[in-house]
Amino acid sequence: MKNLVFHEMHQKARLSNKEVNEALKDFGLYSAQWSILFCLKRFGIMTQTEIWQYLNVEAPTVTRTLVKLEQRNFIIRKEGKDKRERIVELTEEAMYLIPKIEGKIAEVEGRLLQSLSDDEVNELTRLLKKLGKDYE
Image (cartoon, rainbow, N blue to C red; front, side, top):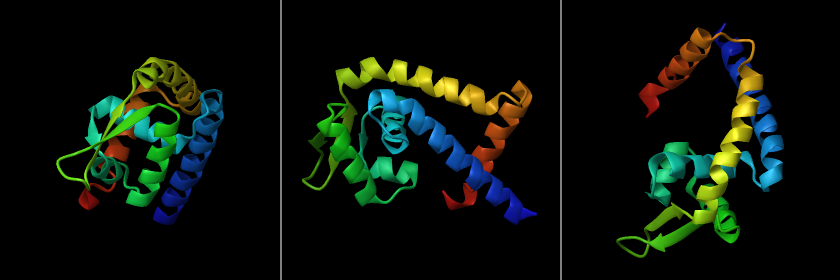
């Protein structure tokens, strides 16, 4: 039965990514870029290392995505304590747009979760947070 669980999770993740990417088109963004913006909004200024570790993504992938976000004036990267460390923060433009983006994402989330009760949504959230705890 567990193979079915992971299959369903994978399928729903693909569906949610597709829907989020569609919603983000208006902003010229993709879900991977939004993940980084969301992370920075939630936690504030972070190092690139903290971002890729939190998102469970390879460092070069995060670096490429950050370059694109920097080119779009969504983030600023600065040198950290040493030349290898890079500090990342949101720009004013990003801070202005994020509430609008969050509104679009909330619409997608609402559509995807509409068949669940509030209690089921809370339980799903709880279970997803619990999943993989031993790997963190």
